[in-house]
Length: 355
Image 1 (cartoon, one colour):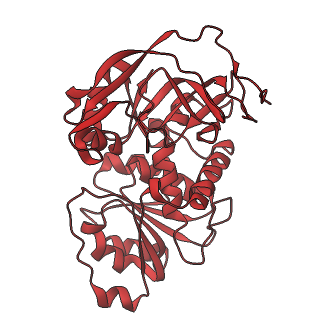
Image 2 (cartoon, one colour):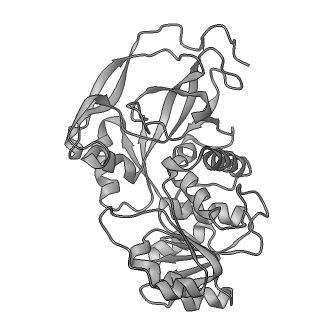
Image 3 (spheres, helix red, strand yellow):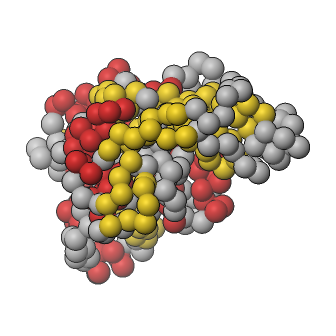
C-alpha cells in the first residue's frame, strides 16, 4: 500500500528529461514531433508510469487528423490511449499500486492532452490496472480500446449480463463481423471465455486463419458464403448477439442472421456513412440496434468492462500475436507517424510502439 501522505517513487531524480511524440495542430502524420519534456510528478490519486509498449488505435490517427479537434490546438497534445509499463511513482492517497508494479493503461488521452506515445505518463490510479506477471507488455498494450469496446458490444443485449465472466454467455451464439480486426479479435476471445459459440466473418483465407487462431468455432468468408445461412447451421434461431464492424454495409445480412429479440452492436464507422434500415424486418424480429463508443459509455459500464477484461487477462483468455490471431507490427517511438499511417492504411493486426 502506498504512503498516503507523500509521493512514493522509484526514481529519486525528478525533473529529468524524457521523450514524447506531440502535436500542436491537427493534420497528416507529419504534424507529429519528437520532443523533450520534463518529468512530471503524480498528484493526489495519480500514478506515474514508465511506458514500455504503447498501442495505436484508429481513434488515435482520427483525432490527430482533426476528427476531434479540427485545426489549431491549445498547446501540445500527446496521442495514444493504450499502453503497458511499470509504475514509477505513486501520488498521495493511492492504494493498491506501488513502484515497480506492472500495469496496463486505458483511455489515457481521452478528454485531455496526455497520451501514451511517450516514455512516462501520469494518470489517475484507476486507469492503471495490474498486469499479471505471466503476461507481456505487448498483451497489455493491445487491450484498452479494443477489449473494452468488445466487452460493451457483448453486454448490450437486453436481459444479458452486465459483466462478462466464465459461463455468462453459455448457450449464446455470437456473430463477430471482421473477426481479424483488433476489436473482433478481442470479441472472439471474450465471448469464448464467457462460454459463447462464436461465428466470425472474414474477407480472405489469411484472415480466416487469424479468426480461427483467436478461437472462433466457425469462420465464414462473406465474399464467398451466405453469412446468415452459415450462422443458422450453427444456431437454427440465429445469433443472439452480433458484434459489427460495418453495420451500414452489413445490416441486411445482420437482420437475416440475428435471432428474434437479438442485438446488433455497432462499434465502428467511417464517419460519413448513412445507415438504411429495413424497418419491417427489424420490427418483425424485435431487434435491438446498439451503437457503441467506449469513451462515452456509462461509468458502471466502463467499470464492468475494465473488471471483466482484467479477470479474462488473469485467466489467460486474452492473447496476442500471430499464433493467437492478432499479428503484431512494431515501431520505435520516433516512428509513431509511420504507425499512424499503417493503421490508417488498414494494417491487419495490431500496431505497437516500443517506447
